[in-house]
Amino acid sequence: MTDERRESDTGSARADSNSSERHLRFLASLEEAIRSLRGRASKESEAQYALAASLNLLSLKYRELSRPRESLRAAQEATEAFTRLARANPNSYLPDLATALNNQSTNLSTLGNPDLALSTITHAVEIYRNLSQTHGTFLPNLASALNNQASTLAALGRRQELASALNNQSNNLAALGRYEEALTAASRAVGIRETLAEAQPEAFLPDLASALNNQSNRLRAVATYEELAETHPDAFLPDLASALNNQSNNLADLGRNEEALAFINRAIAITSDLAETQPDAFLPDLASGLNNLSKVLAALGQQEEALQAITRTVETYEDLATARPDAFLPDLAKALNNYSSRLAELGRQEEALQAINRAVETYEDLATARPDAFLPDLAKALNNQSNRFAEVAREEEALASVSRAVSIREVLAEMRPDVFLADLASALNNQSNRLASQGRTEEALQAITRAVEAYEGLAERRPAAFLPQLASALNNRSICLAELGQWEESLADIDRSIEIREPLAEAHQEAFLPQLASALNNRSICLAELGQWEESLAAADRSVGAYKRLSENRPGAFLPHLASALGNQARRLADLGQFEIALISVNRAMEIRQGQPRNYPEMYQKDLEALNELRVFILSMRSKH
Image 1 (cartoon, rainbow, N blue to C red):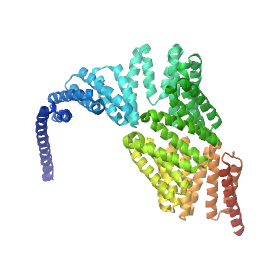
Image 2 (tube, rainbow, N blue to C red):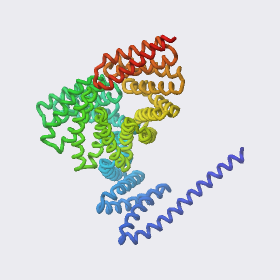
Image 3 (tube, rainbow, N blue to C red):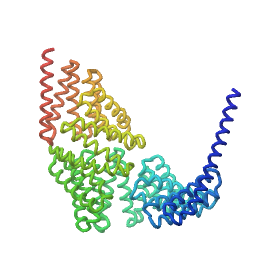
Image 4 (cartoon, rainbow, N blue to C red):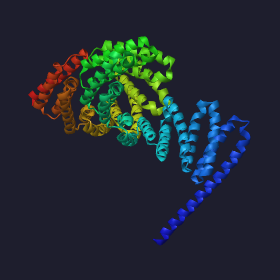
């Protein structure tokens, strides 16, 4: 034991010694390279960049060796070199300058010069903020710089500015999907501003409300703005409306749509009054609120009311875009996209197609003038246009639209995967559906497999955001595999989908129980094909139970799904020879279908005929037994 312990200690010391020697050898070679580059930099532009980059690296190596003053000198020289380069070619060298400034700020803080460190890191933050507006790949750099800025402000005791920096840091972390860290930063900002507001409420209550609005507990932001709006309505009613709108969005994201509806209605009531007296200032806010109202109403199954809200949104943006097309055509196109979805939900497919065609045409014009800004929106509209074409049985055009969306998103995702890979996966999912509807199942399987692989990578980094989409893609791949007769593989995919969806549905029933019910129905079919009758019936029973619960609150949305699940349950019962109970299930399914609106006549008739054939089969089998 003694020998083993000693050997370990000696090995560790030798490793540390070797590591230190390697650092020193590397440092000597780097210093020699820098001396050579200094002589060439005045004559060769490439040597100028190499010198600046080498100086920055030298600064980092000095810091690793705990030589802060030498590290600072190298960092300052690197910053000066990158400043000259960025002045001549900002697109190429601004990122390097921001990196050097970040490094220099760290050195200044280490040496006890926080004031200069703050001005330096603030410069880096400004550069990264501008870069991240056009290139999402710089958001992690911005988050890091904001973190350093917050640390420096804390060291200086500048609490008001620190709260603002933490708020900004929270926003950037949220954009990166780092929600826990975002909440921590937002909570720190709230804590600071609460302390400031206690001492000087008149000065700092508005800032506290802003920070609370950024924190997860949006209800407190609403309460604070309500207090402010009571005493200063002209100043704070717009902020109250904004906070109510944000709270509604937050609740809707959690599947709490009844509560979301109450908040968005209050926001619209305030904004409507404001827009009557100041239309130029508040009509855009009213239109935006109506757009959100439409989404919440649709989620609650109130399709007619949702259509009314989005119709008002479109009309408002049409007026605004007529007066100021550059400012409001994008908003009009977005509203038309949503208008199309609401019409489709009410079975008004031709009108829905006309609306999405207008959206696509508008985005095509916008993307021609500004491709960087509007190609993503064009791809989204094309994806939805594909769905509208499919609903009117124009399958070739549906496939053409989604294929265009895939092509655009492939290019975007190659340049900025952190931003557009999820959109590409969504389009591939849709493309797979269109290919499958044309009987091109092998190609459909290839497309959905690409979507699954993309979502797997995304879900690994951001599970909360992308596990639901991964579950959906697995569900769709399971169907493709089933159509190809690959039942074992199909069952494996649907089981993975259910495994993801069960905890989601338990936490947020309204949002995720429908997907779980659908997956259970598909699992039942797979198991039946594999001859596992008892397990197949168990899955069918669970699916029927889930759809019954959903139909109690939203019959218009879920009774058709319940009818399908009951039909499958009847088949599974018949497989086990339980014909009396099977007859009860199929009769209930037929009652539901006959009592439902016939938005899709051909589909309705086909479903009813299939249920009737199943009923006849069950009756004949019952008579034989």
